[in-house]
Image 1 (cartoon, rainbow, N blue to C red):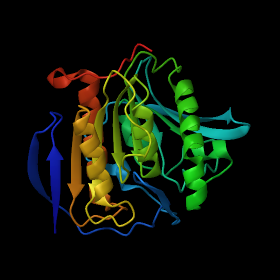
Image 2 (tube, rainbow, N blue to C red):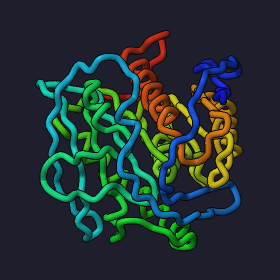
Image 3 (tube, one colour):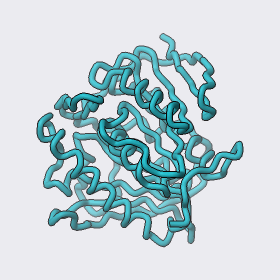
Length: 302
């Protein structure tokens, strides 16, 4: 089959179309998901117990950094909240990638050592010299995962407050302070990442996949973030119209946006497409960090 990618450059209003050869979809157990649209919030509660992540095997440039892993516990609203850190070796500072998982939650830590399984690319990002912070933010609400659509709708503001508080802490780390801040979110984490990037001026760019534009959270900052959207055209849980709505909102508000739509891919992307999303995310973040093509957003001096 072919993956048909609708690829929009960072210059508003200009489109290019490309085609790439794809592979047959691999089997991926489903993850829980939040779908937001301008009128309502719908949660499709589906369990994910995937044993591995193809995102860790993204075809990026040769790794340049070794890294050190550790985890800590933060107290948010009276709840112990796990935060995982991947710190590249060396004094830094390094660009921060703040990763937000979906509504199934992050993989549970079994010991103090580094997990053998990626959630969606944290090891690869660290090997590419990004400082990665992965908060288990649902724990701040007393959950490991959420499957009730009513509860998810009611708790979205609380989740956003939690990830914002945890981002405050991440930005004080001595090995990231003063460098660009990026957000990488999947599904529910994509919605939260967009909401967060629209209100935090230090966020230079956000990459989200299988998410969309959260209702009621409009752009409220002077420095515009870059936005990378990745979505399967056959997604029946978060329809591709959600990605289109986010792209349209960015275009109408002058936000630099790139969108890649993958033909025949559903909500749970095939391993090959997951790897492509991670590879493009790394390239996208590197571009923002270096100011390629004169484009540099955010205010990393915070």
